[in-house]
Length: 298
Image 1 (cartoon, one colour):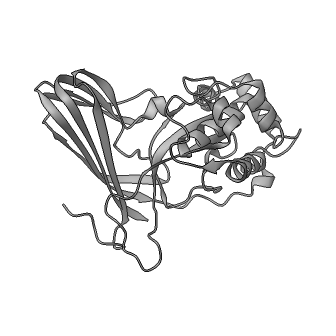
Image 2 (cartoon, rainbow, N blue to C red):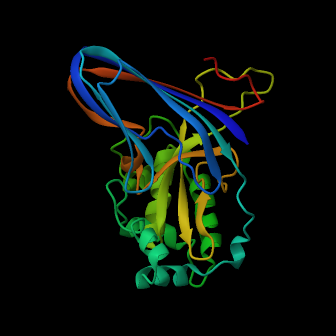
């Protein structure tokens, strides 16, 4: 499927910002199931400098510096992306999770070496005994790994309630496990923590998900949102995606922006600034199939 994506972020400050530097993970990432045909950034006020680079995880990154007083900052990312369906996988006919964990411990080649960085604790994901206990119910000895991950994905979807405002950026994985509520970022962090406690490699995927309006109603402009899911490493297949929020293996309607150890590695907009006082943020996201709903107005 081909998509047109608009991601508009507006910061409004109570006092002037005299200087700011930002790291942007807003360029969708090309990978074996996804091709980015174009991408552009509109930034107001215009940055004094702008550089493009690739981070340690292979994600495209924009570095911007704004050196004029401003009370409002607009960052508007636009892209056209083609996403292909994943290969069909019989999760019951994959290597056991025990064998995959042993392969990662042995670190026998470059592919394993790349995956190992996603098996260690990170800023927002610190495995614990309680998380291991929760995960263990899906990982009986000798069970095919992807079958076990599919079961864990289904349990998180069934046992946890999606509730905006129940958590914030500082909520720990253990707290999410305790309250059994959260949003896609929390469920992705929880599933990754579970997989890492079992000695497996799992990474955080930030992106977008195509949404549909209620029957008989138009699709509202700016009503979509960013999304998060996970990817687990399999020695036979490579990286395989799972979406615990929706209990599914992502297909053509999931558009990836970046991969990382957790949200901190792939935050859409981060940085430092001088001044500003209090601030508020407004985000408007549109994900439209090309030749589907009307294209986003330019």
